[in-house]
Length: 99
Image (tube, rainbow, N blue to C red; front, side):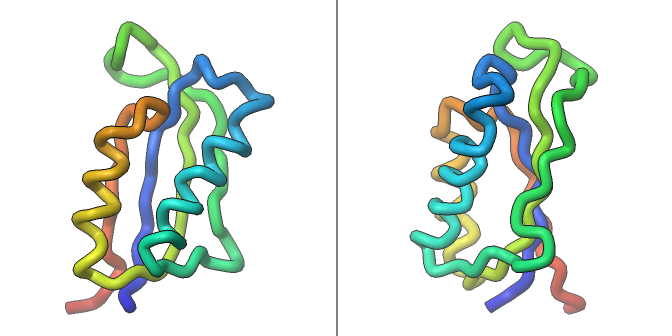
């Protein structure tokens, strides 16, 4: 298992009330792939922020930082699933390993 950090941007049309459900959906995706969500900072919402450029005609997005452990072979599958998710505008997955 390797430690990962992921920053992702959620669709602002979800609204504040649906944000926890969308975050849980991404966390469930990680655990379904055999990952372990970090206890100290499982998913920390940064809130709604203005993006540098519009994505899907939206100038804003909900930024969320997540820490988790996952098998390196499953990282590609996670990114593939996030690409087809309609609520996740963009994501950046970073391995925290010191190779």
